[in-house]
Length: 293
Image (cartoon, rainbow, N blue to C red; front, side, top):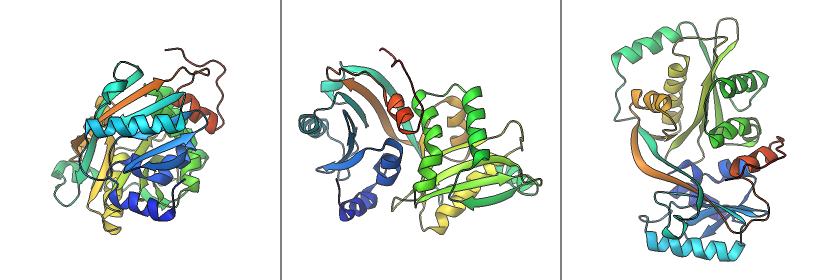
């Protein structure tokens, strides 16, 4: 629903991962559209509106107008909105809401702490770093291991499950792998390079079974190197998510830079399902009963 010229414009103006069209379409399977300078995705009876304007600063009034326009045009049963603020018409109708912050890293202005550099240097003596564009059974095993042990938000959990399809079909996604001297996968990181001005840290995981100290830190440094090689100075580190992930990002110099609000709203839906359910259906998972909210 957008032209190649429009996608190029979006990637030039992008400043959050949700502006990366290929990332969002491959994960959600929705069709992208532009409502003035607001990006959205639509399919079946649902709509995602990315409430971060591509031009200028966020305005509640303007965002409300775009929201009203897109809902009137597509008439979704389910709306998922993300943005720096929830538009006032949605505040009382959110069935699910999340508040967080995006983290960013300026790789030219950030100095690695000596203790962290020593840890990375030590890890590099025992691990081999690979770059690639595919996810195999080893990666899926690490993802399953993480999901079983971690208390991840539903959307984060399903994002991990979506990775094999996304990475395998994306031309701008990179897999960074850390292997031990026996060739076993100890950790991996997914990086997205589609946006013009930044790389995006999508997610990462490490193995408890084949644990290697500071493997994730070594991959973080490799992500910095990859970003620099592609002429970018900034990494969007995504959301804080939880205390452990926030600490990891802050350890490397990540700083909160943009508010994030998520709201799920329903418009008299006959079929009740969540964004998680939509993703699970897309990637081959089934759920017989949708969660009531």
